[in-house]
Image (cartoon, rainbow, N blue to C red; front, side):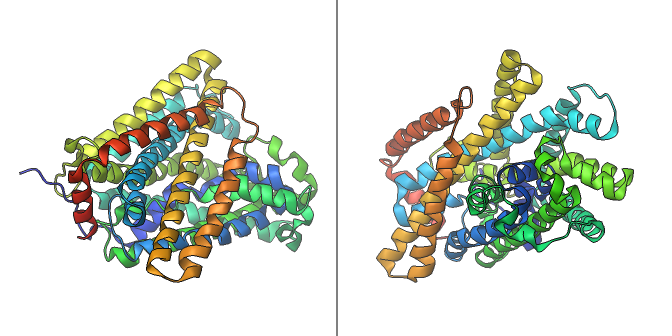
Length: 469
């Protein structure tokens, strides 16, 4: 008999924490992320990351409130369905699929683009450009094999690699801060920002706040987590706090290690974190930087994105919104949905990568594809959170719950997300305009398909049953 159930109680708190951390990828504070934050806010980057952590903790209030009531593989779309009904719920589910497919496409493309480039820059080697393609293919295959073996073994590996990543950030940052000559609390004020609070706010909205995207990737694990109504909320809070501290300490170490007086040249460097690591720790620091930042983080990122995507695909199939075979499980594992998540994400990344490679060349083309995936993921993520916040607020008004937790905080974070939408779309030109156009097309098609689906009473019945389990 075909099974449509997941293995309950199969993952614990810390596996979930590092699943979330895998998608946040804190190591980027030493490479890509720190470039954008310093680019906006200069030497006040640590202030930006501190404000961002506090703002994201407020944003996580919505998950905290819902996870105590709903433990469901549908994740966000189950939350929205709870208070806003089938139409908005399923629409949120389709947005989530777009979000995580775009994230995986982004990861595949950026590793293929930057793998050999980073190693050659760091170590003086001459690896060919296709080395990155081989690496991302190997990590994708490894993550696929372990995910099909079970959620626990795949997340155990993610936990170990994530822990190494955090320990490296903490160790390197502590060493740099202890040796740096530019230590100052001014980095936690707007005085080192080119235009004061204005650029601090820009860095917060366009960089720091979005850096935490993925903290809610554990939400679709509600049916597999131990004591889910407690574990999910703790995992989200712990992931934000750990990643936030890594971001704050790491950004401070990068700013004072590079030199506050030299900060104007920071963004012109390919990998400024590598320069800082090599300056203060020599070759050993540079080798560890490449090993952990380039090699070990790839697996955790793919698992952090692919695991929740497969659960949402499984759940939507179980609820009748996607083909029924995608809800099949074997030994409590949604193997059909796992297959689908890998096939769809790799196919999308391969097609986009090839088209842009053939049109614009390898480095320019893959960079454009990476940026488009990133914009798509950002637009989908922001709208998902706006819908979940709105759902929580609408539920609070009907049930007369705590207005601060259920209405005021969600509304405030929604306002931040609307502002972030503006900054995400600001100044886009061709071919980057492909992203908002594709997003609008997906949203319209999803909305039309959702309106068709909700007319089927079978779907509503199935969802109600799974929500009440």
